[in-house]
Image (cartoon, rainbow, N blue to C red):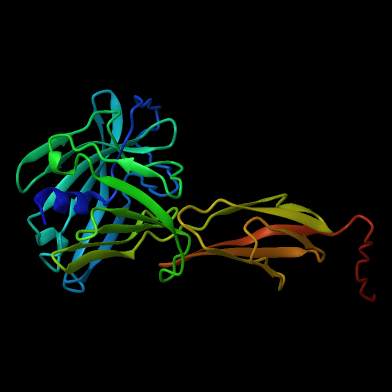
Amino acid sequence: MKRVIILLGLISAFLFCSVASATFGSNSATLTNLYMPFKLGDKLSYTGTGTFSPGYGRYLQAVAVEKVGSVSCLKILVRGHANRPNPDDDPEKYDLWMAEDQDGNVRLLKGYAHESGESFSFGSSGMLWMPANPALGQVFRQLGDEYTQVQATNVTVDKLSNGLGPFSGCLKFRDGPDQDVDIEYVAPRIGSVKEEWNSGGHTNGWILAAGPLPVAAFTAIPASDRVPLAVSFTDQSTGYITSWSWDFGDGATSTEQNPMHTYRTPDNYTVGLTVTSPWGSNTEEKTDYILALRSKSTPWIPLLLGD
């Protein structure tokens, strides 16, 4: 496999070009694109598949916010190419400077290959990592820059691919001629899920080993009033979440994201929310968070002791 294909395999199997000049806002270094969410400190780990030894890994980590020209970019460190069990021991290391334009497209502005000392720059309107709204059947052309070997290569969004392990609704991208095919499955909110490419009859690839756990958080309005107390709970959790589990403290539960619940008995109630992703769960519990007071219509008769 040519070095440029290896490089693009490390970066991604899909880099897209655009004819229009990109416009960037003040939040360009926070990638909110549904298919490529990334912020400073995030880390995604991958393990090798196929002819790559199982357990050999790679990771992508957002390590800094730096400017490329006037655009604030998220600097993403890529370590590992299945040559070592520990990605940090692998000599192949890349830096990618990425930003999100005002249309929601994630753009790769430049990169640097540490092992070879090569820099590659695409400018603010050249390369796209992931369009905000990729269309099924849409064909994109890669901008090869100095890598003229791939200048005319097409990248096609083939179809929605379901049933990929715990993931569903993945977009499937195909790149390359029949004898040398790069395929990438990308799930909303968690970036790349599975990547595989074939060269000379050998299939190599990656699969996302673990993503960041979600962080549970919630609010309630009102948190105190007289019974019957109708409370609106709002989920404020972060991360990729597949399910919500509420415990209202009075024996009632809910699996809605933003439920309503009515407390009918005066008391203090502890409320908990557990959010779950394909990689695990996280819980926030607020002790005595809800205070349900006696209704005005409910008389309170003190117990009078004898003489």
